[in-house]
Length: 112
Image: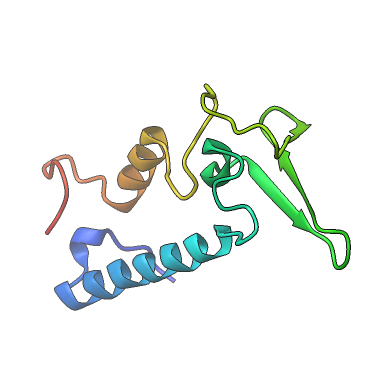
C-alpha cells in the first residue's frame, strides 16, 4: 500500500475522506453523552478527562483521570485549568496531522 498526499487525490477521494472523518467524529461524540450526568458536574460533564463507570444495579461512579480522583456529584466544578472539551484536539495535534497529510513546501494552508 502506497501513501499518497492529500493533494495527490482527486476531488471525489478527498470528499470521501472528509465525510469519513466527520462520520467517525459524530460516532465518538455520541459515546460521550451520559443521560444521568447532564450538567450535574458542571464543566466536567463534557471534559475529555471525565470517566463514567455505570454498574448494573448500584448506579455509577464519576472519575477525573487528569487529577486522579473521584468526582463529587453534589458540588459542580466551575473552573479547572486542565479542562479540555471532549472531542477537541489540540493545536499541536492539528499541526502534526496537517504535516503528515501534506508536506509540499510549495503549498501553504488548506487544500480545497
